[in-house]
Length: 197
Ligand SMILES: *[C@@H]1O[C@H](CO)[C@@H](O)[C@H](O)[C@H]1NC(C)=O
Ligand SMILES: *[C@@H]1O[C@H](CO)[C@@H](O)[C@H](O)[C@H]1NC(C)=O
Ligand SMILES: *[C@@H]1O[C@H](CO)[C@@H](O)[C@H](O)[C@H]1NC(C)=O
Image (cartoon, rainbow, N blue to C red; front, side, top):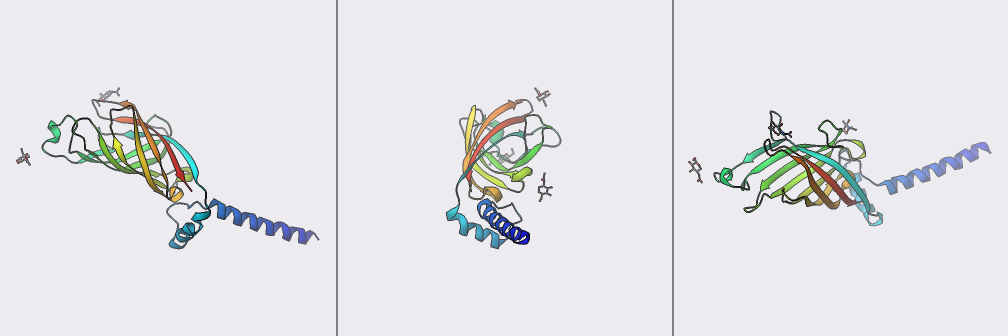
């Protein structure tokens, strides 16, 4: 009798575990193979959207011997341009929980931006948030957008993602916390909302 109870309990646990797997359905990051990836898409019609809010600070370091923002291309006219028109740069900026530079790192912003406006400082941004901690470790969000750097708030579209954020769409709202006009270094607050599965 006791044995039978145990068997019933065990089979229910298997059913519940299976339900968690089907409902949990979040890919775990970069270790998923092609079979799991295709299975995920087969289950997609039964999945519901989730809304996830993220908040972190980006440290853009131009000065010193370990810059995280380096110019790749400048034209002859860039140095004469009040908007740095024609500059293209690469970034690998740390993202931290709090505004302090030694706050725990949650990921990095890796990609490119170009100065593409003649009449005010505005960048075309194309980069990824590459998360490196907690449940988002290994997942990414892809950002493409217009960044008028001197505006109080800038809204950049999130156009996709990977891992936990596969098929994500959303918005990153940027607000510059500090900008040192002598060194060019900046700390930017990011409020991110993403829809994903
Ligand atoms: C850029 O500047 C260099 C050095 O002054 C000059 O030799 C070159 O012709 C310039 N190029 C253009 C496209 O104006
Ligand atoms: C993130 O994932 C990588 C690769 O799986 C692992 O080496 C690393 O320890 C993880 N980091 C954290 C903070 O969990
Ligand atoms: C701004 O940058 C300059 C040059 O690196 C530095 O001397 C100064 O202390 C910085 N100012 C602030 C408020 O951090």
